[in-house]
Image 1 (tube, rainbow, N blue to C red):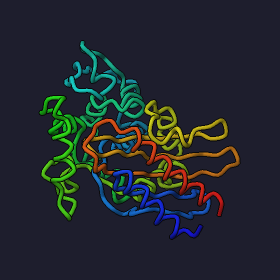
Image 2 (cartoon, rainbow, N blue to C red):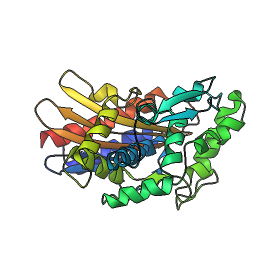
Image 3 (cartoon, rainbow, N blue to C red):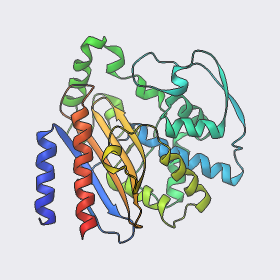
Length: 300
């Protein structure tokens, strides 16, 4: 099947599955890539925790921060389903910066991420990405804003109303009545921008090798593995990734490394048109489409 025929088929499958998908898969050895709407900007949700991890690790390397520094963290501030880690703590805790980095990246702990943002604010994280020659990702706010959406304001039985608002209240210019979904106000990025970040972490770049290795290690130990991981994990591969989820957004970025030496950077950013919080079929479809594109590149 030709690349164009394949992409047409994948677009059809995403549409039938109720997803608007923006994807890019790149062979990190050859630079060959295949994608669907890879330059479309979408709200990033928890994907920003990878740039945050990169900025924090770089500041530790520079000596601006000490990973062993203990910080006081207040108990979690949310009772809604989803958040993990310190978000669920009932008592104050003292946690080292290194361990906050682990919690933020590997458990997608929003409270841990916000403590790190207190040390390196969003604008500084974006500026550090630019220092590394990485454009197209803008970090605008902390993670606490992601727990103040219509979903948290409605009763659980009315979650579908919040999701319907997320689906229907957007504009053609990627604006939105829900600020966390407005690409001019929310942290945002494209599939291509995130693949560029992954390539800079996995291949020689302006990022210091020790820092890149640190972030790769964190992504390799990501514990949230229900989305793309089932299609990219095996005894002959390593899957390192980070997910992002908010209202009708379902994202994942990662790198699959094969035992034969091949490696592929993958970014899948999606918006669902189905007003339901739990959609295992959408997660599976994301993985199937991404794997199909990876298989196509692998066979070239």
